[in-house]
Image (cartoon, rainbow, N blue to C red):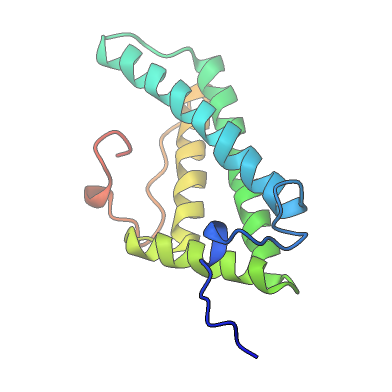
Length: 150
């Protein structure tokens, strides 16, 4: 018998599968990426941008480390997406669909988000090693990016 109640979906649902629970594999990976790695990277990137806006030159070693951190975050992002997309449990697949829909509403695909992360890391590594910047990935319109990312 149907209860007649509609519960929220995805991350807003109060009932979590063992995979999506806070201490489950997906919950831990998501928390580490969104609660620790990316905020720390954004903070470091803000410091870097401030230093450059004041005429300073960033420390190549620091930029190289930030590139490595971004590579690691992108790999974790890809593993998390694969885990959600290929999962046996419905809630993990639902998270994948919610994530894909959110990304599309931002005007990007999940693939383009990963490509942009790799491209940014590639260019940071090029700066750190004195190499040439790389062109953006195919299909990426730099004019659509916020000024701090372009």
